[in-house]
Length: 268
Image (cartoon, rainbow, N blue to C red; front, side):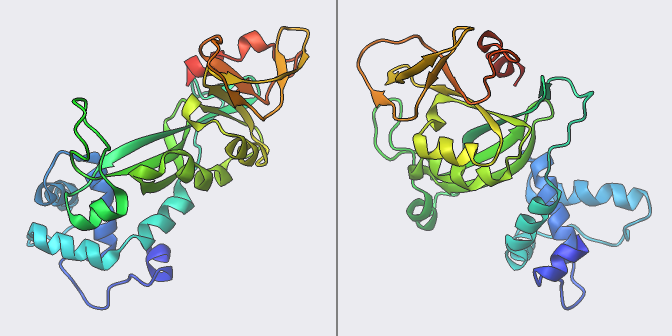
């Protein structure tokens, strides 16, 4: 923690009610107590330390305004660097659901988060395009996050955020660099695209992705266990095709029969 604060130039220059190290812990605590107010999170964070006599009893929980200013001083750089240093896959061979055959199971997925309804956030991230009733540009502005997750532990070991309007594939390109050989990456149909597939495959990880049922994947070769080898120039077609199709570069006909390659989706 101290190394990160020093390297990012965020060590406080004078004693404060909220030193930089405490603000970092406060941000992490907000993830644990997401339903609580700023003041309550600060109280919960320091109460245990006071009980263990590791925190001075005279410390007063600051107001939301003071906490907000401390967060603004800290900025995002220390948290980004801390995440890059410590967030890694953590499963061991004994972790249930974390491995399939020789692979460490990982998945890529996206989600959205509501933001304060300000003009700056709307301009930077955008609003949901429509409501269920067809209304345009309603609700709070949202950011989009795409993360790499270790199955079995649900540990997020890389993440990227972007504008809601950009879709999932744009931030996905950023996180793929954290893939390694020996991983099997699961992805749903929204991530499939030729460029993204090739970028993921170039990391040395194996891939098992769903594709849309209206994609026509030309058959290059039919293998002995019924798997179909294809190229990556799919064309949309109105013709029907079997639902829930999987596209994989992990298939080895004698070692991993294609019928078994749907199992990681259930494990993940």
